[in-house]
Amino acid sequence: MRPLHIDFDAGALRRNHGIARQHAGKGTRLWSVVKADAYGHGLIRTVETLADLADGFALIELEGAIALRQAGFRQPILMLEGFYHADEIPLFIHHDLTPVLHSQLQIEIFLRTPLPTAYLKLNTGMNRLGLEPREFLQAFHALHHVTDVTLMTHFADADDARGVDWQMARWTTLCDALGKKTSLANSAALLKYPETGGQWARPGIMLYGGSPFPDTPAAALNLQPVMTLKSEVIALRELQPGDRVGYGGTFTAETSMRIAIVACGYGDGYPRHAATGTPILVGNQRTRTLGRVSMDKLCVDITNRTDVNVGTPVTLWGKGLPVEEVATAASTISYELFCAVTSRH
Ligand SMILES: *Cc1c(COP(=O)(O)O)cnc(C)c1O
Image: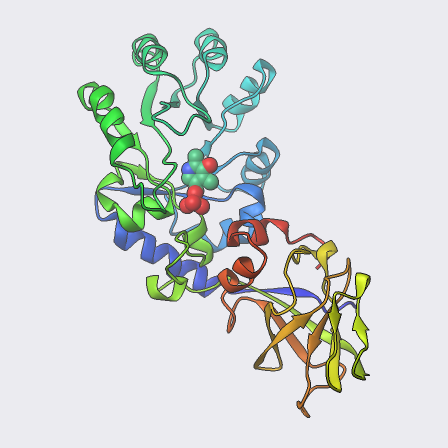
């Protein structure tokens, strides 16, 4: 069997949920966000691990929500993009799913067959999903007699310098007077602005041990990696000065070197944009990648190492190597690396 696999640390997932709980405080319940196959961690095993801790699960995919119901999970489920077509409504009813209503079209469909619960989403400036203030108020007045409405928005800058105040100003103007339950905070807001927690916060990345902040390592937030992406060395090679490595020969040896070939590439979700020098653990020691990442393989520097053989374990990211370091080297964020891990492991 190809040695690439995910080590899934259920204990870390549960402890990270506990950290989210601490930040949320007593009055705030938590949607555990498990969209995109639980950020690449596996939907069912993630939900199983959190089943006795989570207040509810939030995701995007209707198939995923139905799979959770069929596996016997009875917690509330929030569908973050709601339904896409009217013909999904019977499934929402049958499986007891709560839709986010973010568009006028959804409101029209919903009013024909109101469900017991719904989230009503206000655009406060992210300009992605959400109703404009006028539509939002109209929808609220049409809905709140027939359904249990929770008010929702999403922050665009909770992880950076611009922060949430500018969006909160638009939010409070409209929503404070309505006296309803609210849901605003993602991981970054929950950690940095816990006062935005409302009745239901929506942490995602922090559950998986990723930091939502560009400049704060996850460990500084007491978060632990849930996914460790592991593989093995499958070949060793000596290089002479002038030898080049991989497609396009983008790395050239200047001295004699030893390299190892690792079974992991962009076909597995490792970022092709990770340049020469991306950190990687071979055995338990840090080294660097060399040359371009291929579909199934990448090359690493093991010059002066005597402990490396075919079969030596390699950590691409996770325990011992924060995913953020690899993400930075590939000009992306942990979220994208997690989600890209393919089912080939
Ligand atoms: C993905 C998502 C979240 C979770 O965001 P994190 O940054 O991973 O905590 C929360 N709310 C909505 C609407 C989302 O789409």
